[in-house]
Length: 234
Image (cartoon, rainbow, N blue to C red; front, side, top):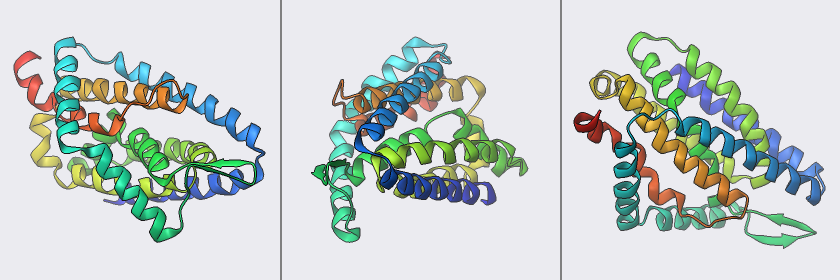
């Protein structure tokens, strides 16, 4: 779990720095940074989506995963959690205050969690840590996440800090269950999980650009369904 704690610390450090910079930037600069970051997130999503080799697995995972997430109302639950966090910690709301538009905790939490947890580095790096004690991939990921957290927090606010909890739970679970999950996570399966997850990142980027209002959280089950479908189609 050492690598996971390093990753969590990196997210918290980057998020804290981002909040500091957020107070220093005029709104027009913050908006420009936000849109530029969204374009970078879009690039990350498109790049990862090209890793998939089995289009049927992707289609089934996204379609059925979205349906499952809708039935479970994952987006609604997360937004209600965000509202509770805002009430508990005096968090941010979507309103204009002093010429600056503040974003909700839920938006920052979802955006950062998706970016930090979805992808091959999170899965493969956590498996390496749990199976052979090789932390190099997660340490490299931690540096990337720290930089991303600075940019995200400067635009989306304090909700980014709470994504450290998602990193701890998600990657920590993979590390602890590494020996159990290893047979299910061959290279083909990891590629398809990354592909499905990257499509969610594309949706996240489109939301950040205000082009769509997708309930990206409802598609989270799609990231894990390739573990099932790859048994039959890969």
